[in-house]
Image 1 (tube, one colour):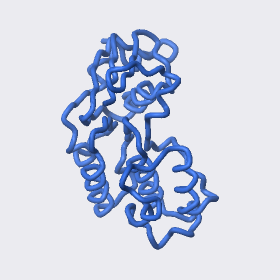
Image 2 (cartoon, rainbow, N blue to C red):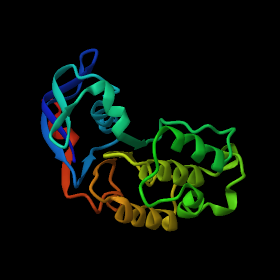
Image 3 (cartoon, rainbow, N blue to C red):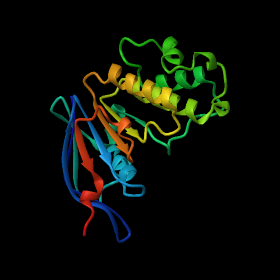
Image 4 (spheres, rainbow, N blue to C red):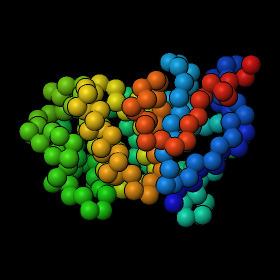
Length: 209
């Protein structure tokens, strides 16, 4: 089981603190949401948990099954869906899935041949990703993250560009594939994005006065 321990964590850019004195414990099987207004630092918080953005102060520790995992190795155990992550748009859907799952294994019990069907894009398997709508690209990103065999799943504004049907699909996918993993969602104010989350953190509570 994945665990993350933050102790008196702080992150700043120049003299501006994004958050400070943030201590928290995240542990699977559980889902957490980090909320906040636009520009409040939700994405930075996720990037910090990923190890992409080093802390300015405090510490972060990762454990799996109670055993420490080095920060430089944590990427092996993480999948992420975020607006700032790009897809290889010259590839077709099938090619994109094949490439991704050559780097990260697909969940046990899920067949790569069924990937396009599971994300609702079975008719677009041979279409180049550059010709996808924004909603189709979001389904692809979410599918790659949710169906990777990882202990930690990070989702940044996961329902952006999704219509009502897409949002219902997203919630069903999370319900089906949560299993024993740790989910952390960054969301603005769409409660439907994180209705499944038991742990709530408001990042603005950790901004210095």
